[in-house]
Amino acid sequence: MTGEQAVALATAYFDSGEFKQVLARRVALATESQRDDRDLQLQRYLDEEIAPALRALGFALHQFDNPQAQHRPFLIATRIEDPALPTMLCYGHGDVVFGDDEHWRSGLTPWQLVEEGDRWYARGSADNKGQHSVNIAALEQVYKARGGRLGFNCTFLFEMGEEISSPGLAEICRQQAELLRADLFIASDGPRLNAQRPTLFLGSRGCVNFRLSINARPKDYHSGNWGGLLSNPGTQLANAIACLVNDRGQLQVAALKPPAISAEVRAILSDIAVGGNANDPAIASQWGEEGLSGAERLYGWNTLEVLSFLTGNPARPMNAIPGKATAVCQLRFVVETDWENLASHIRQHLCQHGFDYVAVEVIRGTPATRLDPTDPLVAWALEVMATTSGKKPALLPNLGGSLPNEVFSDILGLPTLWIPHSYPACGQHAVDEHMLKSIAREGLQMMTALLWDLGEKGAQLIAQHQAHQAQSGAKL
Image (cartoon, rainbow, N blue to C red; front, side, top):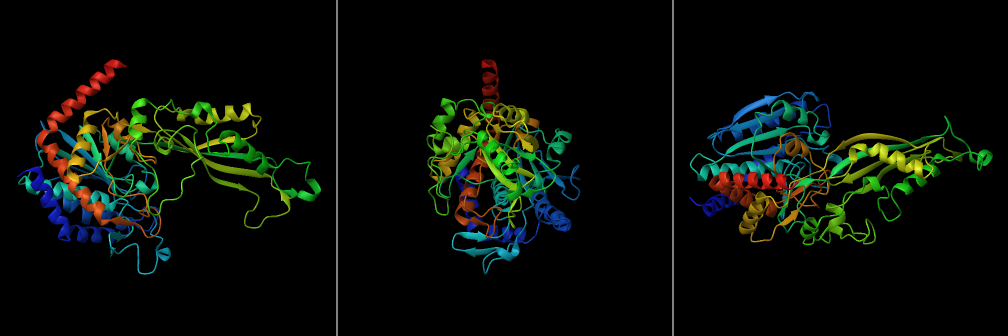
């Protein structure tokens, strides 16, 4: 059988309605990891949906308790056809965010797959049950087409706590590094650039949240009696934030800016148009770093956002000068940003502008990651995607948002290729979440072709990747 025939087999499987039936069964399990009464559902998802599918493909199953979050287990499934073959690591998460049942529009519910035109509505349809279901189905089609073989070794890592920031994932990867040993990483999460264009991204921007606070006095005082005599923390904090990011959304802290965008990344992003699709918000053309395109601002630069600002009582404003004010801010950043010293950089910048009384507290942060876009694996994936879809794929050096990619790229040391099967207006983390049938079908075709090709020339691809790494390292 050829790769084209394997893709035809996958297409017939999808068109038969079997994929829809599998997805409908999976989204029916309310695997909300943010709730403490869904433990049985989370375990059932692994036991009833993932384990049987992978066991049927000859995978050995290894389940691990979460070292940081009780009842949010991990499943590592391994299939070693031949130790001499290359090994691919894949990943998925079976948990979802809150269903928010009562706010879905009439006729929809989070836990029942409803088809309307090109849309499959259900919680998890896009994030992430639909996406990892595409990849499992692609494995199944290649296994069937090769008569019970893949042509490569495969390991699949499932977690059930991604929506609560993946507690324990890094620790499990360190503890089970030998079991997770692989040559490359291919997985699906996040959105495509848009619904029409297949997308490959190579990592993700990092993210660090931090809190700014001013505690001037233990209580509020009447503004008529004390106005003009007492400092107003709300006013002070607003001005402090304005010295960090200006009125056009431009980051003002030089130490937290990335290096200039390289010519290579700039060339990649010149092919990327952001926004302008149905349900996309209108882009503010004068917002963000001056002199950069929209794609460069989103995928190649750092942004500081104010997520919340609280002073006084917004629900019942009083004629009083508040005693305190607090804001939660966020830095989204690309590789080579000194984010781990964010607190000291913010404090130093605030002190230089006279705001030495503002307290800075880092809440949490995750690193930025990016596979070298010139790696031969990137060109290979793009070529297979283009040939299979008949479209020019979008290449993103990194996702604009964040994923736990650092555990795969940094802890496990793998080249990371992400091929999403969703799109920006999917309703992810919102009501009326949905997957587009057309994207799922195309995604299954591309993944089947990619995995078939990996089985044909995996050793050659990994050798090319390793040679590129060695050459790149020699240049440093």
